[in-house]
Amino acid sequence: MTELESLAHADSARVAAAGRIYADSFPLRQREPFDALTESIRDSEVLAWLQLDNGAPIGIAVILPFSSVPWDFLEYFAIDGTVRSKGHGSALWTALLDQPEIRRLIFEVEDPDDAGDPDERSIRERRIAFYQRLGAKLVENVEYVVPDVQGTNRERLLLMWYDADRAELDPETLAGLLKALYREGYGLPSDHKLIAAAVHSLGERG
Image (cartoon, rainbow, N blue to C red):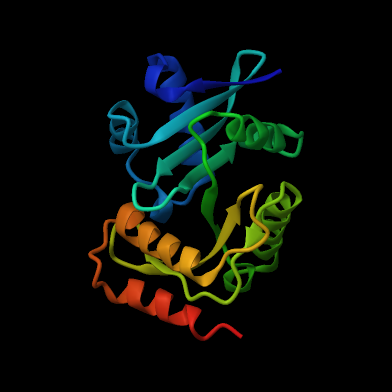
């Protein structure tokens, strides 16, 4: 049976288990140092849960609640690699949406077109299809480029969103989300050229 435990109140063994899932699930360029992440969790700057299956840690979800818009940035969502493709991801998604703190979600996925080989492309396509089965939608035709965690390189990503009460995103809402992602998610100044390019691309959508 799936249950969620807040990492803000978890013991050291649970936190260590979350750290292993985190390190195994995301490339270094996308990973904030885990010590810094856990500090943000303890300070309530971000929300994080450990998924338990009959008491065993099997998944994590990390949320940054935006202050400028009524949305939440799903920064990290992962299942332990040893138990994937067994329905745990869907269970984690459902349990996450049941949390009273959660509003509506925006999150990033890697673009299949930028994969380096067919196997990686297939993994990225399956990941997008997984979220679509759960009701999430892709943001189409937006130029979304972000700095990596080290701040030395940039990466083009796709955006997905989930709001059970909304059929589509209007340009004004999407512009607000882009600004929140860059400012609150990545700490970029309001006049940064990546923000300007992303917002400008909204006007070029056909």
